[in-house]
Length: 241
Image (cartoon, rainbow, N blue to C red):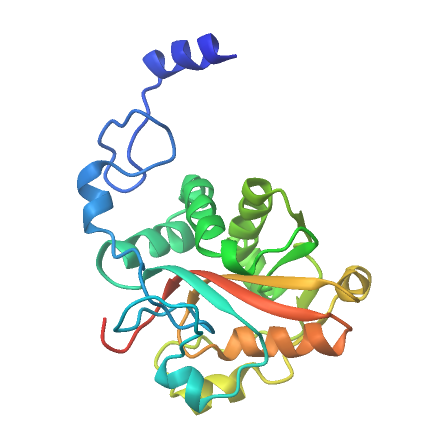
């Protein structure tokens, strides 16, 4: 298998998922793009993963948003800030049909979420409405969740949650409007929602801004009998980013 992969790499050389420069391993970033991608490291908010000032310690720290808003989930992590090359990667996955980004992104998410992952974790993506699915043809959160499950060897249910109505886009809305927009729009799937009962859930989405959609999903999971809910996102919108 290794020889075959080596031969294939000579015919179809690996490219950086961001700029198409040739790289040694497939599904990764070249050195330049890696340096330019705003990966989150160091001290982070334990609830959402946004970077914080200060040194890492054994004590959980929280950002202003998570101190102000009551989060229905437990812990959260994010891979990168939603700006510059990080934003371009997310938009390429979401709107550019760049499904190849999901695999390396899931590897980054698995590492970021390592502190909150348990062996019995059930990975569940944030759902989209069937009309939006029909138009877009895929759910980027489900792509990430499936790849994350493979990377971390966790069970995945891409249909445990369902969106019952097509909500307006969240762009341009205030935090209050975002929470109101998604209120009552998510429920357990009629058939697959039973998988939530008694499980530790890891919710997956591409971007977290206010956390309104993730909060709606977490509340539904807990109401369906989930023991606990944590979250991981590919990118986090940060006020000071």
